[in-house]
Amino acid sequence: MPAERTVTGRDPATGRPLRVTVAGGIIAAVGDGPPDETRWLAPGLIDLQVNGFGGHDLNAAGLAAETVAALTAGLRARGITTFVPTLVTAEHERITHALVAIAAARRADPGVRRAIPYVHLEGPHLSPEDGPRGVHDVRHIRPPDLREFDAWQAAAGDLVGLVTLSPHYPGADAYIRQLARRGVHVAIGHTHATPEQIHAAARAGARLSTHLGNGAHAVLPRHPNYLWSQLADDRLTAAFIADGHHLPADTLTAMLRAKGLDRSVLVSDAVALAGLPPGRYDTPVGGRVELSGDGRLTAAGTPYLAGAARCLADGVAHVVHACGLSLADALRLATARPGRFVGGRGRIEPGQPAELVRFAFTPGDPGLRPDGVWAGPEHVHS
Image (cartoon, rainbow, N blue to C red; front, side, top):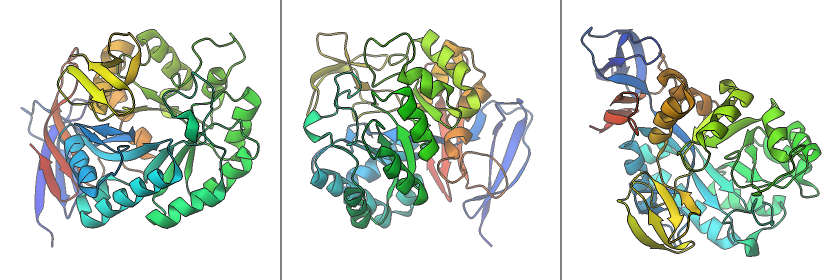
């Protein structure tokens, strides 16, 4: 019989003290905890879009398995026990190399394998237009090609589990249907597609919107446009960057209300500079950038964003004070809701993986303050 251990904390939904019994990396029982418990207890956070963190860059040339392992450890310390590495638009060989490196990291370390269910390809099948393209390299934007996708899967052992694309391309619907049949999640993002093309993509099997409200033109027709269409289509779950910089509070609040909390998730879209001290940095893609103390990352000397630099735990805190959500609702946007796209993770129930974060939080805090993180059989941070 595997050794048992217990984890305690208050349920954010009810305030009830909980005692969670864990055996063999699985939650065995959930009961009443000590009445004087002061910390909160939640499922480990789940981030469907991570480009890097703590100086570890998944999109740097020559990605190594050791970088993936270090990134995993850095995110766990912040309470993120499951994340989806995100690779952006690049030439075929560079994406292949990164996929192979991530696959090698998963083979080498069971903890990394538990943390990473699959990889997200954000591109290269995006809009080439300024605005929707964001910072993706226009030289490598190209239409969907099933042969190219099959080559990536062959190289990495079917590790690609999420693809973001723009459905404006001829043949996009057929491509989406093929990926959906293979169990790959498809998201709409970085697009200038028409409303008709958005809805056709959802009919074909697209089920997510990537960082809705960002990766868009600065000026849009009042209506119709691709933002309204994605908000209105109930087949699409919308991901939002809740860092306080990518979406103003009123915009994020209105979008969450329009989409509904059951069809919304939070993502960090964090880049490698997230988690580093404020200052000026030189980056391979954006050049000289400036990271402020509140996590705003801009091109140096300008007001323009150069990426997202706050982790998902900060996003949970942000929607509590900026959008008026309860702590329990905010946590669900970063646990059970994205958990539906990673095999049903993100719940504290018997039979679930023992992925837990115990933390302190009071309204107004800029982030959650973990003092214990568990991932399967491991106590990975305290």
